[in-house]
Image (cartoon, rainbow, N blue to C red; front, side, top):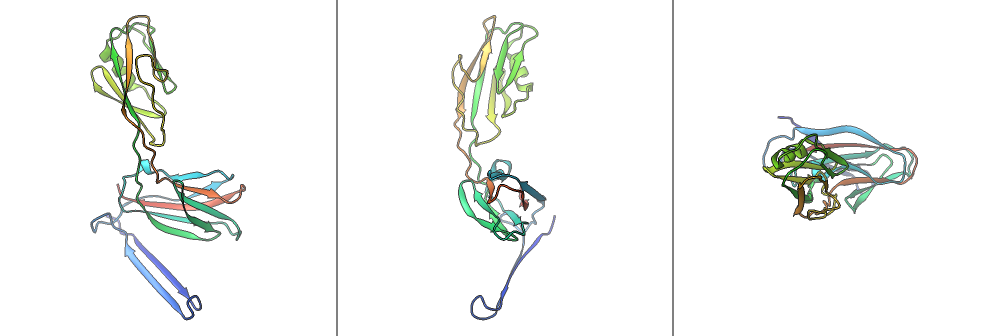
Length: 236
């Protein structure tokens, strides 16, 4: 078990008209217990070179509503340069040169789109199934069960796939922000089958997508080089 201490100290001789001295410290524990946080991403630096918005941490990659903590620091020494920090499209604030932030993160994810393909009849040599830029071409006549095995064995850039029965493969989007609704039916323009025989692949949507709203993003104030330091302490 790792032990991680966090301390914040505020001091000023004139902010509130008299001396200010405030200090708070805590041990970073997992949600609901006294077990120390034991996983982290970073410490790392992200160099930006345009006014684009950059995603630092994707909610889909972490378990929702646990005790995650995020550290950010603008390493710029130019006083006017800042990063706008957002959680999805909600602005958390600006980090100006030298500023840093340490805050909790719920990592509430969305719902990933899913659909099934039911294979039927006879699949012959040369028949194809095309989806997500991947083409499966049969070298020999296959049963529907063998066809499912081939589909599951393929690697897709934006979807994962599992066998849910001997003749059904179910696809799930890797990212809940992929809001595409795959066209349904045996003549889908999204999942395309071409057969010389009687083989069919019928698409049915199983889960409608809902975008997550908690990716942590940064937008630099200038299009020239800026660097943000970051670290995520997270709970699995």
